[in-house]
Amino acid sequence: MLVCAMLVLVSALTSVYASGTCTRLATLEPRSQLVDTILNISTYFTYQTKELKLCGSQCLREKKCKSVNFEEKTGICELNEASLETVSSGYLHPVIGAVHMSTDDLEYLTVCHHFNLDHL
Image (tube, rainbow, N blue to C red; front, side):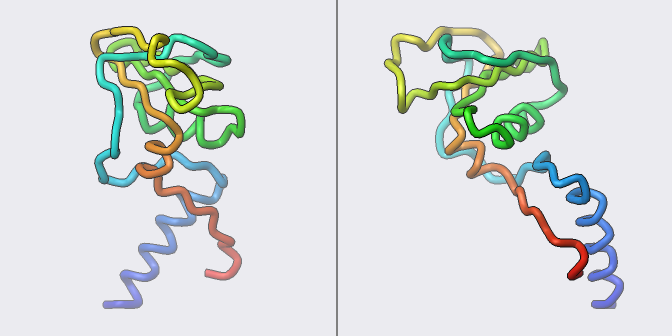
């Protein structure tokens, strides 16, 4: 039974992590997030995606990304070079249905392990 469980785990890890990407989020709640709010400064990339976790994963893959804005209804993901830690709160703007999260919160939520699958 334990051997079967390990094989299923290895198979799942291989399919999820073989590409070396970080797109799977844990079920933990973020320490802080700004709901119905965006940070309106330093957006360097905007695209459309299905979920906050994909938006956050993209940010964590990019060194210059410090925070994200995600609008759930439209699927608009904005990657920002700034975060509330680096700019004034005067750059926060209300947007119903949006969420702003810093990389600290994204790292807290993200399960991102790059396994060397040759050793499994």
